[in-house]
Image 1 (cartoon, protein in one colour):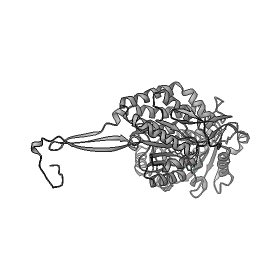
Image 2: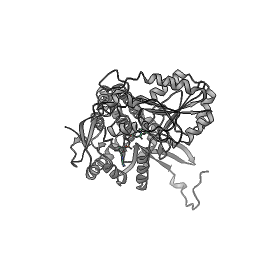
Image 3: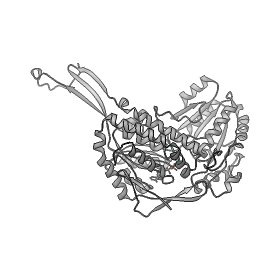
Image 4: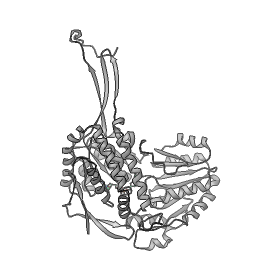
Length: 494
Ligand code: NAD
């Protein structure tokens, strides 16, 4: 059986722990490979490799670092099909969806290639008489990224592009569920001219993560995953003096006002609810139907669900693939077993494909869900869309704002004033106006509020560069020794 390796010092390396974690083919339910979980010693070796590479890479000129990003962009572009197929093979999402993930990842490479411009500092001439003040941004050193299963290519790219181009070296701990693509990206970075050791991959689970969180040579930790893990990683790594951005889970609400175009809103709810089988942190999992929108909206969504083609990525007509694991599929299906007073409009468990050996579950729609139901309170992370009915805009807003999570939200309406008011009122990091999955383009930054983010700087874009650099302010004077004198007063600027 295929072994998935680590990537240390610019080459793939066998794992030594003997602790083999299975990598499934979610479409067939069979094991296709295994990954050997890193030991503490192997993780320390990755950090040491990144530490050795740091001075040289930091000293590389800005244009040299940008050149690596340009070359990496071309290599990823040339290998799009192969990377997307690998993502599909281990994650299960359709190849078109995997190609979309890669395209959004590439945006981050393109943004990072512009770092020479973005890393320019500030300069104030004559801040005091004969005194100039300027600020520069410098890399932190070795930084670590810990990433989730649902975007095995894009989320690492959110992190390492900005980290590397600003002069840091990187240790990635990808999800153990779909680890192969990280090695392909590592090899493409090598081909792009990144020096050995500047990018390392340690495979595995908590054992490797625990080393990274406390290691004195790791300066910063970027994490994307579930909220309980994000919270614990934030706590431990900050306690050990590290800069941390830890992005957590989500429960994204799509508010549909009575004046919305019902057909467009239903198209959006189905696309955003069931795309990637609901395993997206920006998936819509709650439709908040306001007033008279509810009946026609539920009917329009029900009708569209009937046309979703569920199948393996190998079937080019498939629009929705399996879930990541059998346990996860069963957990998601469990929410349909006891819906309480809510009404199951479409039960995905009844889809014939849900009975096969693959980890498939058909799309489900549950209406009249109440705010105290686990269907509403839990991040289900599967193809289950809940509809909560409310009477007014104010009730919809109250629901969104009282939710534990604040990753993304969207409003569907034809009333520009209502949309603007929602944008103003809503307590949430990313907002869509008639856009159901408002993932910001790479030259903005991505991040939720409340329990969807621990830390303050959002990921990628300008805030990503800020996260991976620290600012130094220089106050400078070139005095004429003839004018020098002793002055015990506090330095002042006038
Ligand atoms: P997860 O939290 O189980 O795992 C994420 C990473 O943390 C993996 O690399 C895993 O190996 C590691 N990990 C797991 N448990 C750990 C522990 N106890 N200690 C240390 N490390 C641990 O998440 P997942 O199931 O891979 O991904 C799905 C979750 O990620 C969902 O909650 C989803 O909303 C979230 N997510 C959030 C965003 C965002 O931007 N906010 C983006 C994508 C996914």
